[in-house]
Amino acid sequence: MSAVVTPFPLGAVRANQVGFEREELMRILDLYGRMVAAGEWRDYAMDFGKDAAVFSAYRRAAESPQARIEKRPALRGKQGMWTLYGEAGQVLKRGHELPGVLSPIERRLVKLVED
Image (cartoon, rainbow, N blue to C red):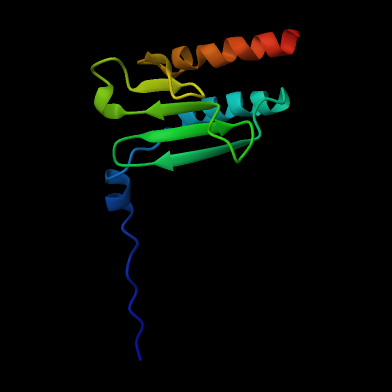
């Protein structure tokens, strides 16, 4: 009896889903770590679909996300591929560059550390 090895279709999976680049993910996880240290966030989730990659940060795992960072490359030429959503789903910031979109959370973190 001979075994048949079927290769994993890496190229096909990556072509059909949006993901974060290494630098983007490092920037997001750095902010997440600082928010955890400040006691604001305790859990996160990532979702990779064909249209968008989403990073959601939670205060408690059973709640809706306190912040959601979304990357939609299809919007790159329009209002920017990055969007920051608040807890109620409202758009807090849109832009072409990730650091600018994360700035509302960064400002909140500075206030938390000062208090």
